Image (spheres, one colour):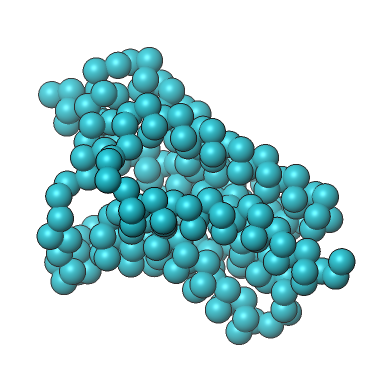
Length: 233
């Protein structure tokens, strides 16, 4: 089996199914996720996909973890600082987008009831809050999404040694990631897609996974924490 075919197979097994299923579900769903769903599904499917990606990377692609996700030299403290820096960039983009694309493309829909219900439950359950801000946020969301993003990018980049193709791959991967968040509306798709392009270019240049995980966890976690504080008042 040649290298190109192995990378395509890896994408088809580990990345496309879970993303396409989520897009299909969001397009056809008639009920919102419950708090139980929002807690268990990230751990079950996110954690399972993490293990699947690691196995495919080692046994199908034939690369080590470092070769795929940390191929350039770096220290843990520089990764932490980089993660903090990307978090700041995320929030700058967040506030800019609220005054631009979210004004130009109003959603016109209902508030995200499943998120609101989950935040209310978190505000009233210390145990649930620990679970959510611990393994759910960091493993089921941050590690899962960033490992999936970088694995998809690396597999696409392996198909062709061309800078132009690598840029196209970043755009394609970011478009897919944006569409998966279609429940946030058109503006949300664009917002997520733009953030994905930014962080994908970071990975393209520095090839370090930890900053992406840190920034993702902090960005989502701080926003969720603000929601929980509001509902506790």
